[in-house]
Image (cartoon, rainbow, N blue to C red; front, side, top):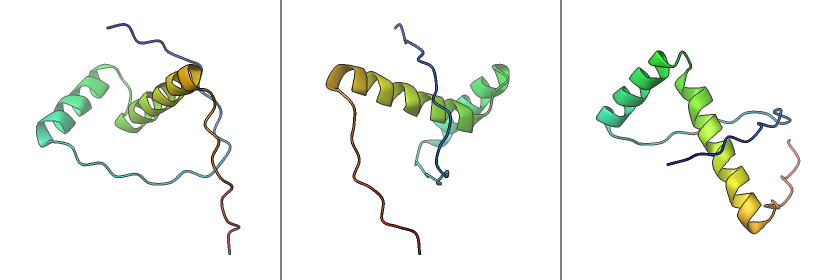
Length: 72
């Protein structure tokens, strides 16, 4: 499988936490692979998400999100 790597935009907004449930085996294998590639899991997951969104937008056009409500 060929995966195209697209340039990553610079973060322009605050970061939020995201929790995902995966099997323990997948988590351990992912951590092992990240260690062998000398990267960390967070950077890899963010990269996967950015690549997925960029690929989706290339095929379907830009995703327009509604504006966030003002912070208190």
